[in-house]
Length: 361
Ligand SMILES: [Zn+2]
Image (cartoon, rainbow, N blue to C red; front, side):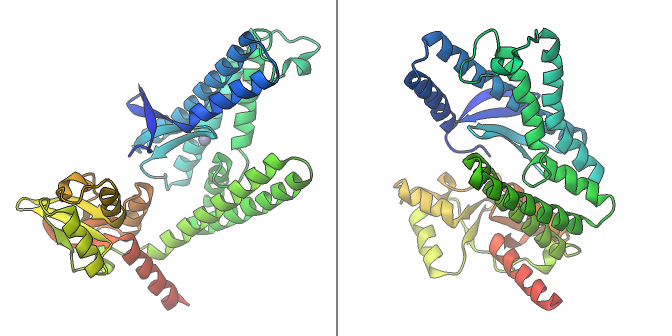
């Protein structure tokens, strides 16, 4: 699934690369701040060129993760470039400690390799620190700055806290000794402690650190919750949690009819099926979106999600839920011997989690 308002840049090794529109704001901001400083057109061109090259390095970093994941048969949906960095959407996160370690390390390694390749081309002079002036780039300091920024990217990403690569490396290393959810809990706690430290130091020295601290704190929290939920679902199958009552719609039903069904029931997700079988799913958000676009009398087939996950009654509930989370699906049809027998959605898994948590107390 591609992020909204993203422009495709093409494919590398079969992986689609998108750039998010907010990236234009970054370029615009650089041009604007350079103009405000009274820099010349040549200076501005160097700055923009630097950002573009830097993001090529960020893309290479993400491709590093993606290609390492490919070795373990994990596909990458796409890579999206945002002003704050890149995001490789892997179809799943490797569970084996060694695999997670390799996939997490592959990104920062790419930046180290780039820095290593650039090194022979750089003439080091005594006033090397002055040359590293990102506000005044030219052919004198371009490669040197690029090398330093790549080293910085590798170091920054290796901060041992989620959602940084270093957090995954740390968790993977802990997983060799501890159970995975215990390892996650330790890694998340250490990450949050670091995050609080960043916020505290940033408060006195650098507001940017406050921002990074908050980002890391939330990332660590999300990862800990995800791991906690996974460990509670371990050992169960889809048959333990799925809903037997399937809210069915036909592809020819109108959006208006769907919104009536939405109001008249507790269902927030529907399965769309015709005589041949299931053809899609429809969530509350998709209905609202279609209504907003004025598609009142359009058929469901205009708004439904055709790229759904088919679950089997005996599939692992943990796997099913993890796949739904990583692919951001709110519902999935459940089959038994080729027949549709039910549905799972995020809310009913959430209920299942609440119940098993309460039982475990
Ligand atoms: Zn990375």
